[in-house]
Length: 209
Image 1 (spheres, rainbow, N blue to C red):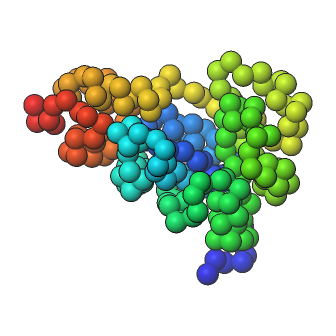
Image 2 (spheres, rainbow, N blue to C red):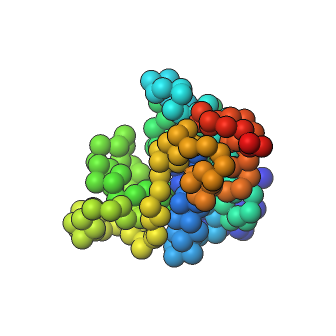
């Protein structure tokens, strides 16, 4: 049981993490420091039955890669809570489930400005705004001033956005040989080894080649 005397401010970072990369952890570290968070939980999204399984790896594999990537980050932990929740995985349902686990803590939802732009389309978005803090990081091309006026209650941080995405990393892994693969610089070493050892993302040659 959680110590009722201990109150933490926890950030919730949702994503497919397919795969998790240095851009994710760099962003999280910056938000952790800027927002004065005690911890960031990486909530790994489950397998969507409507998506191509060749593109989105099974949830247990993506969760394990997230575990590997966060081993060296004391204030970051992975969560597979959505795997056991009803599908589709609405954020509001996950927030309610996490509130039961962390009843004495402050929970902040971490999203990009791209999601804030369409936040009014989220299921029970008013409930989320009323019951949870929201920390927003900028996405290139978004009008931050306009978003501040629309959602004055959210906190927008100046977080670094590295020029990489999971989609680009998957393309690198499947289209370049393992030796001198450009994806390696963007991946935690343990994650890289796990991908190569298990021939994930259609890697074209073996680790020993």
